[in-house]
Image 1 (cartoon, helix red, strand yellow):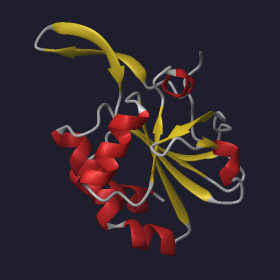
Image 2 (spheres, rainbow, N blue to C red):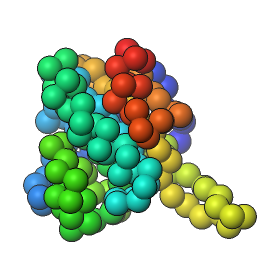
Image 3 (cartoon, helix red, strand yellow):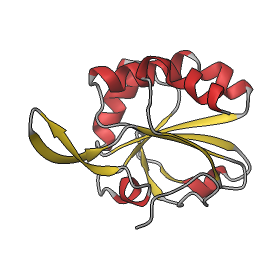
Length: 152
């Protein structure tokens, strides 16, 4: 599949959130969406990123943004993660890896010389019409929300 670029239509998806509700990207048509992909619930980098979005959530909302986090963890894992860190936004479970594949973030990784498949940390800003406005490939986990705002 071709790599997504800024200006492309964001692939729609339907999946369950941390509360078992079915949601689709198209539910947010007419709103600006920050769709961020992260490797795993409750790991140091992912926690820093989620907490940064949490700490700046009000400011992002005031600017009209919806925040959606996606990982391949299941609903139960998302629920524990969201509860532990009081995350005010939706976490989407992509345990079938359909969304990470559609967005091209299911990639080969390498840790300590061992190759494996995993989720690349990447953020997509999607405009009201469903087009990708900005793609952040190098995410600074401790400053992820500021990075999004500065990029726009």
